[in-house]
Length: 291
Image (cartoon, rainbow, N blue to C red):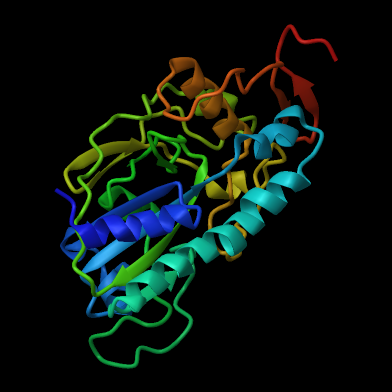
């Protein structure tokens, strides 16, 4: 049974607006390189708390219709992580520190960011250490990594943002999620107008005993996408933000048709045939649709 203190922490995070809270003991990160390990940032880390907040489905509506892109940029890419989720994370960290524990809040910065400093000790990695947040979310029991390489949760599919707290509090961990959320259907592959997602089987990764197949995705091609992808909002070296791109909107459509998500709606996400802009910049609509 979950400890009273762990329950209070989760209740605090949810009262502040969190939709997802998962906890992993630092031991689940055994084998992770020092350059991405939580203990490289906070050596006394005993628990890793992953906090998530949903991307409201309506934030994708303007992109889905091809008529309004700034609302996704504002609410889902900017305000959600940098305002709403940041405040939730600090509230949970404050609760931990109000109870005598140190809490290190971390924004989701891409692991592709190169080292930006000099190692201060012979056995320490160079700054800045970047934790793989998607990997951490799996270790904390929030979900799995889908074929698209994105975090998929039973509640919202890929529609969430996450942040992390490292703490020296020994919290009750959540079990690793065993549910298969992504069925590797290939909808993302066929929906990509630029062919950035390979049709051939991708690589296998294993996290805490969970084996997941990830597609081979050309991030350079994704960076040229005009179908709802954006440059990484945290750092230019990071992979593009694809959560509203054609591939991921096809995923939303497929998962809703499967009825596999906890968060459900009265009407389907895809109400009209999908549009696409190819590598030449030419727009088209799915066959059978009127312009």
